[in-house]
Image (cartoon, rainbow, N blue to C red; front, side, top):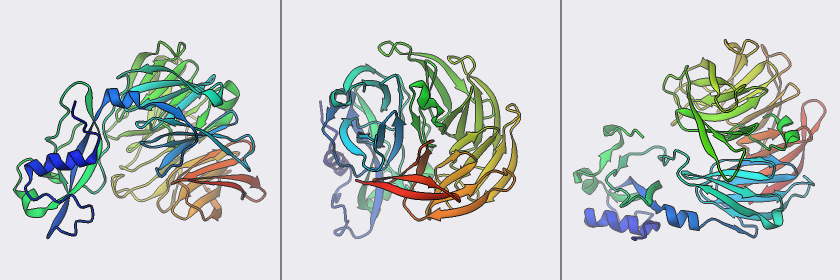
Length: 424
């Protein structure tokens, strides 16, 4: 089988179609360089064989955080899962690494860790973290589409998998001469083509908790995952024999992409680029769409406390054109959510809520709001740090940025006190 895992092979493939192709990343030898996005082809067999549990490893990738019992997980995109003993938040210990190159999300119940690996659902037994065990790979159980880079100018779509074992894992950027790109019938300008393709109460039920960008959630014996356009429900009562029980389409869906999940009581709240959707989980294996709150297109995770939902909406780039804001939504009537208030706020990302205190990340750091009155949330403090998401536990706050995790004690007057920093 041809090894298409190496970027060099992709470049050579392109060079066979474009004469005088330059592979130098800095494009110094090109007269008029342009960036062309090309598919990266990988082997499913090689991907599955590469799964391993190793000693602690450094990381240089963006990621998410997840908490289970005294363990803290850093899910490094396109790399794997870093495992920390966080029994002492002032001195977390890096204890293991799970090599899983296609991971984006995890969820844990009863010492079983469920993770995506591209299109596979993978299960690890973490009951003994000094001897983590791979116990199941459910092949081709998830829908996987490779994400496209932002700000694409040119795209070459005619590079395909050769057989059923290969798939498009991602995309690479190759610099080429503009004249050769524009003269090549297999390369298109992006606008010429159409591509179709917290609540820590759970910890007491032997289920972990993720940040506001989590796409995996466990409720009872059901594991919920998101595709771009639907909710998938899996029966995980037997981790060795996982089955898909239902697929739920959002009745209020107007073309937005489903992005994040949050569970409160018997309801799943889904953040989407077109708003927030609510799903009833009383029949855990057959969730039922209940209602939606919609807005103009924007990226938006959601968290909920009591009868109030909080949504950060970020416009610009691939997220949309809506003005950056925080939406505060009344969900006391779950069938008809209505807006309490809107707080305009620059470039918000992840968020968390605890005891009517709202934590929101943006480019300025961690912003702490008094949210006792949902009709008038008040910014009380801002802590300058690089954070994109938070998990407000009952004991302390955990934040994550690119290659950094920080933990804070809660103090009086909406304050935070830094207790540790993990810098990768």
